[in-house]
Amino acid sequence: MITLHTWNTPNGRKISVALEEMGLPYTVKTVNIGKDEQFRPEFLAISPNNRIPAIVDDEGPGGSPMSIFESGAILLYLGEKNGRFLPVDLRARVPVLEWLMWQMGGFGPMPGQVHHFLMQPDGPAKDYGLARYGKETRRLYGVLEKRLAGREFVATEGEPSVADFAIIGWAWRHERHQVPFDDLPNVAAWYERMMARPGVKRGFEVALS
Figure 1 (cartoon, rainbow, N blue to C red):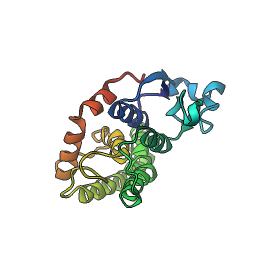
Figure 2 (figure 1 turned 180 degrees about the vertical axis):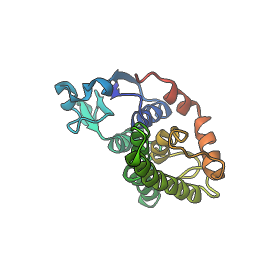
Figure 3 (figure 1 turned 60 degrees about the vertical axis):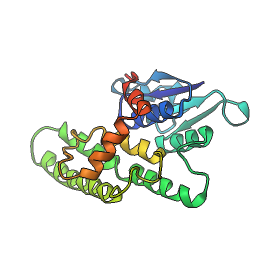
């Protein structure tokens, strides 16, 4: 059994989606980041950077329990454990790693800044933050739009990969990013395709808060 320590955020949804798609048994232990529960010693023991999500796998390698923090590392671990959504062949695996790192390095941190500045008082600081990070967020959506031209999924053929699970966690909030899909037809089609998958649906429906 896997215990998912998380809250209802894009990074948390990446993992609930992956777990549902992979059919791995898990339970959810909520970590209310609004009440600073991520700083509790018991959570820091498995996530020393005090960030959600983190998992504890009771049946880790060799049958011993193992904890993993950082959503990208969790996705790679789950892909290895499940044997799906992470190609074994190195040539096929590299694009998955590239697009997973693209999400972790940009398509997450940048819209996350948009989230932050949207909640700030009106004024020059808010205007500057939204202009700067909104522009970069829209650029990243444009990169994704080009990548998905003629493609069903971001990094693989035939079925999604852990990179798709990572990206959908943030694309789920595209309206909050102030990025409509009107001029992003490839992203829109991919989004609809992903959200129609039963596992993805379950991953977004499970209570994380």
